[in-house]
Length: 452
Image 1 (cartoon, rainbow, N blue to C red):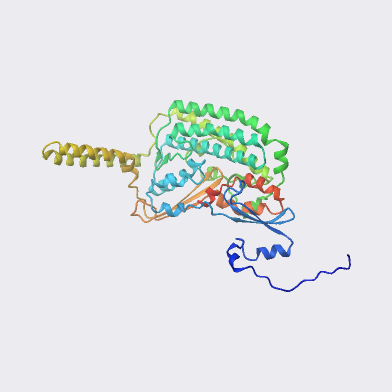
Image 2: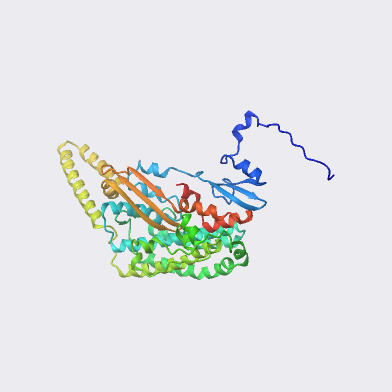
């Protein structure tokens, strides 16, 4: 048997024409490169339960990952283009949806760009309410990511507990805004409605309960030996690499970079509150998870400070005087116009005039003062950019206005997932194939957020 020789026949083999359309959707040359290196090309997603609607093209040698090429875009909705055909105020419900659980932080970044253009000063009470709601969403997002990570690691209890705690943040959102997830609560110049003392008491009690139960979650999942074994020293990114690959948010801070937009470029009430920027030095999957777990504790402290401050403030002042002034002017103009039309209708015979007057009044009330105030917002000509620290990192908004339209001429939105996607892929090199889902969960990658 040892004397047998291997013979190769130099006969070119081409696939039949009818299956050319079934060629693998991979970059040119990847298959040939893998074949020469005795490697395999595997596909994870987009229908895979752990891919989150994104295809990962994985090149492996044995079970060691050599390269991962992302193929995002399966849940792309064209939000930037859609925003060009909507009023400024109509884009708030649209742009808060990419991250779903983090609706306040995403709408806050967009609204702040509008306020920057209009040079609007937000009242103190509205700033504290915004900060409180942003941190409630941060807690909800981190709990969501912790639950999904637990599923990826096969820990069912670790999934159920944070999702149960997250219900408290959804309830808080509902009591303040009327919606559990997509709130559409932040508006240019302030917030849509005030928060009463009873709701503030509930939020305070909910934070106490979450903080208490997090100790149990730490014992059951965070410090679980299996969790540590699956994530410790896995997919390490050094401080230099984290900066090079464009990581943001808690994933950047997990590699030792102390950068948080809330501290570097404070907005709303963050510079008036006491809190710490959580940083870790290891840069591995476990550190990325721990940073977010510890940020929940910081968010609870921020929320408590906001609740205390709001209880001491007089209620009611939740919208900028600049916006309120426009609202009063619009209301007076509408009233004067209605008065003139009423006089004209009164000159006509019978009850037909009164009937039309009531019909017009009903239609006007449907639009309401909200539309009359915000529906006609027109920004000065120019380009306005804001950075906001969302739960998973920096979200960037750029609005380009032509100075004439009440809709953006151009909108640019860059989400945290899109920022750190390159770092996520680079961290996988050298990991085992079984580590892929653990690393995925450590980044909390959310395709709808990245794809927009």
